[in-house]
Image: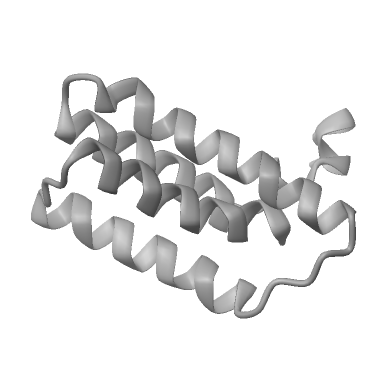
Amino acid sequence: MSLGFLSDVPPLTGADDIVAIVVVGLWAAQLRGRAVWVVPLCFMAAMSVGALLGMASVGLPFVEPGIAASVLVLGLFVAAMVRMPLLASGLLVALFAVFHGHE
């Protein structure tokens, strides 16, 4: 099945990226308050930065392990209902998102 114009946008077509985006949304909802919009916004903004780095051929180490770790860690955070301060949550998802965008 072709996604038309979206097929040329790698960050939106990979299953690992979709899973990460959904898990970030679930975790943000569990955190409540401003995290509901700040955490997903941090993820999408950092994912864009990662995509720009990738398009500029800037190499990042451990991209694939970083992607795998993001899905695992964020999934465990949702399952365990881990609560972190807003700044720490935003920075954590931003770190993971750079890998997803760079892919």
